[in-house]
Image (cartoon, rainbow over all chains, first blue to last red; front, top):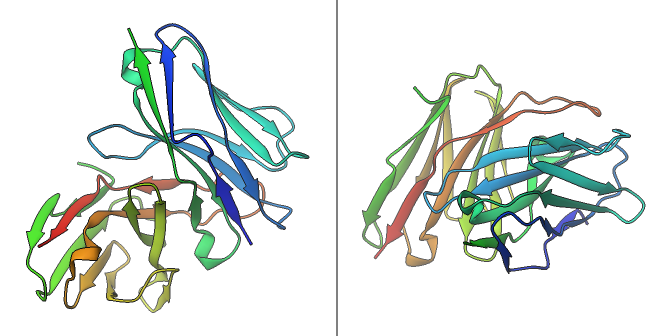
Length: 115
Length: 116
């Protein structure tokens, strides 16, 4: 079964420090995509970063990087130099090849950045 | 204007009422999705559509119906709302990219529905 697991319901980080949000996935597909989204308290889903299963390099977008370990089926999000505005819910998701290319989401991790 | 617009943004309705949530997009994407978000469960797929004539159930379609009026419009209906349908609802679109390439998804801002 295809599944995304985020085992950290909530995390705290000090402002300006780095933080890693964990994500493991399960799929038998050879081709898939992994996404991270940020959801602030206002509710919208903000795309952060994408990693394709065939991408050899880890994805980076500004302060966000994705630590992709294919053999371990993990796709952890690393946020460097945390800012107060990073406080939000973070979702890991996987694009599937069935059901119309739907995204399967993890349960989310709520990140709180302390000043 | 937003690429994917959901209306209303917030709605409170009574048990047993019929309610429609609307979604329109300017992305030109063929694929449209309705998701539901509950605390601690992430987002789950209710329905998805490839085009006007192709509508499919997702994992939690019971109690919901949809209508794809045009490529740009995809509506979600609750025929007889019940309190456990209280949730945040998202419409999303996709360009349906295949293979290893990026398949772009665009989300609406969400509709907060409360059934009392």
